[in-house]
Amino acid sequence: VTVTYNFNATWVTANPDGAFPRPVIGINNQWPLPVVRANKGDTIVVHFTNLLGNQSSSLHWHGIYQNGTTHMDGAVGVSQCEVGPGRSLTYNFTVNQVGTYWYHSHINAQYPDGIRGPLIIEDPDNPYADEFDEELLLTLSDWYHDQMPNLMASFVSVTNPTGAEPVPDAALMNDTQNLQIKIQPGKTYMIRIANIAAFAGQYFWIEGHTMRIIEVDGIYTKAAEASMIYITAAQRYSVLVTMKNDTSKNYAIVGSMDEDLFDTVPPTLNPNVTSFLIYDQSKDLPTAALLDEFDPFDDFTLEAYDDEKLFENVDHSIELTLKMDNLGNGANYAFFNDISFVTPKVPILFSALSTGNAANNATVYGANSNAFVLQRGEVVEIVLNNNDPGKHPFHLHGHNFQLAWRADDEAGDYDPNNATFHSVPMRRDTVMVRPDANMVLRFRADNPGVWFFHCHIEWHLATGLAVVMVEAPLDLQKSLKVPEDFIQACRDSNTPFEGN
Ligand code: C2O
Image (cartoon, rainbow, N blue to C red; front, side, top):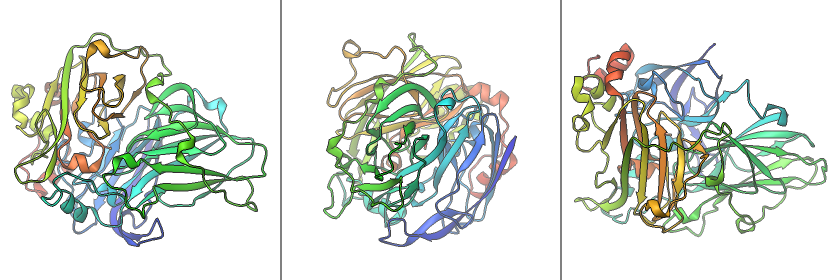
């Protein structure tokens, strides 16, 4: 089945926290954005037209593997040229995976201005299908009153040498606050939760109700009980929640932004967004309890439902050391192995397609691309040493990865003698490394393509916290033909790429 959408990006006005109306990027003059929904095996076709007038754009399908279609991945400068104002192109890809995903533009820290929405792939064979009656979808996010180009200019500036990130003005749930969700007593719901934020992780809980985690980032887990879950920017969870038969009270659903991420917490900030499970419309809305009353669930303990074992034999180990530092101009940037990623003019995929055998040599992608070439089929390990006192949620395009190991706060750099690997690790596409600590991720290079690996805090991606995996480039040269509209996007943006 082919599911087709016509998406025109347009500016609209929104006021989701009730405090400040502002221009946001909508689709077809609407905001919040539509949910993209398909079944496993469907082909998704999105005719995308940029009617913003003043900004270029793109759409990235976060968590979609793009097997055979790496050029549909939407990352400007990595897999495609920008879609300029007034221009169009068509995304066309098949989804042989299931679960909770999202989509967002992938250019110039644009998505926090509103161009971000959920993407759901239904599973006809959900192993938990017998255990729930209804489905619900909740997005979490943070919200800024100012627009990203302004915020970015003051963030990357000599007047901000410490790199203090702009603090959100509010938290949102389903792009609003005080949402009331009418539920049916006694029924079990599968609640999909996606954090589509620019920056803030959120602690999430439902008062008086236990959650059973069954999916993370599109991968089923063995069911695990949690009273509170920490969900970083870009992560997703599905949980089963059984409603009470007693309708004497309503209950709060709370998302609470992680204030540890903020350099200074403005006294006026309310870090929480509250929604309500409504058992009885005539009853009061409760006041939420405090964050401290719960313990967050440790996602390292999750196990993959399919029992896939830890990859033991690593063929290719990549060590990445994360640092924040000032560059010559006095502004703060982020580095992996002393390189701050700079988006190249020619997308890395197109360099991979047009350089013949040299595509196997990482230097053809330029000194600031932080490119790593992977050979088809090898087991790749990323050892990430976080030499920064901040938390960072890392996302790999084109794959999920095993979270083989993650150290506690302030553990320092990776030391194999102090690491305990998980034998049936959870797999996911976004995971947080802890402050001044390390983690080890593993995946098989079974998906030829060009894939970003980056911090999903937009402030950090914009200041270079990224590397690029160039996976089996010679295979791509044989198998991939860039469609005419993607070549036209390069011509329109004066990028020297005339097709392959
Ligand atoms: Cu959610 Cu590089 O993306």
